[in-house]
Amino acid sequence: MKREPAKPTVPCAACDGEGISGEYVPELCGEGEDQPCGACNGTGNVELPCKYEVCPQCEGRGTSSAYLGAFTSEDWRELDDDFKEDYLAGRYDRACEACHGLRVVLEVDRARCPAPLLNRYDEIQQEEAEDRRMRAAESGWGYDSGYGF
Ligand SMILES: [Zn+2]
Ligand SMILES: [Zn+2]
Image 1 (tube, rainbow, N blue to C red):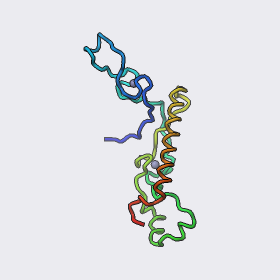
Image 2: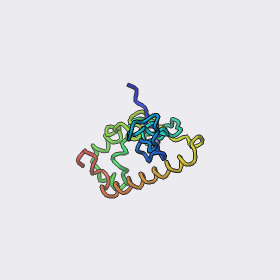
Image 3: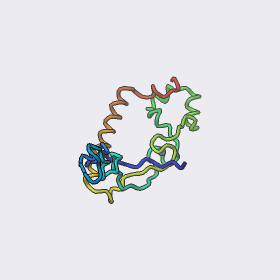
Image 4: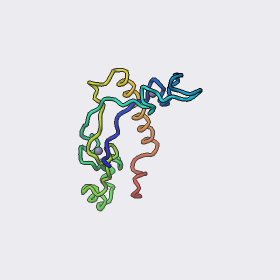
């Protein structure tokens, strides 16, 4: 199976991300039956128009050591020589988290995206970026790298 980059989506406004229509359509539903939301086909999410872009996290390499965090020059001086050598040789690289090794990501095609969806999408992106910052601040750098340094 060919893997595809995740499509950018926003929660469906018509059903509030539930995927279920509140509308009762006698011809379609039995008594008290939930109908899938027509606006999102029952998925709860609406896909945005999108286009392929070279992955910004790994710059199209498909692997990245960004999970280790960024080193300041002071951090770097204190690191073990063996580690530095391996790091520079890319031995700590993992499949890139942003593109899962696919080298491309699907970015919202802002020119084709209706403004209300785009605004919602930007809001969600901002909230997620804020979440990531909070988590990064709590965990500090590198401690969850799994390499025990
Ligand atoms: Zn919906
Ligand atoms: Zn990537």
